[in-house]
Image (cartoon, rainbow, N blue to C red; front, side):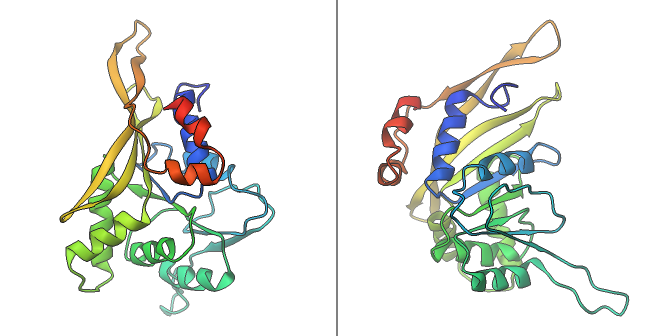
Length: 244
């Protein structure tokens, strides 16, 4: 991805460190923007000793590790029975002693179970979500939790999101057909009723070349990442500060 200019080498390093440090990462983007491709790339950083459970509608993830349990949903039969939903699989996944849970796509009421799994010791979990901006991804996540039919106050929902999700990657398919990671945003915490975030990297559009390809630069905000103490715990703090 770095070789095809979909992501800068510095952003790629930060994402590698984030995956290795077991951050909960949400990959946001539109249809066909390359979310699953990025999720596959990030999954390469999972340690081979870790037990990973993947939950998908259609098996698209290609994990290379030896300890992978693949779970797939099932639609109801003609009699309307036998359906296995994402929520059913998530509840069962928690009994399988996973180190990480990877959800192919989060699009409904299973968002609540996913957040609870992220909050209860399954660090390093990843998922994709359909949204146009990182902030919109957080709003969409909040709306999906509302689909679960649990009447929670919005502040409680946002507090849970802020403590569960550490980083959001925004992937966009641009008008020249190139897929680019346009935002790397960290979820920092809560301020009043609002989830606070900070941008680590953004893609700045700079014009169009004579070949019709868009020109731009991946710019670092220079902000010290909030997950730096965690990177220090894994011995990756120096490598992280060098690229920021």
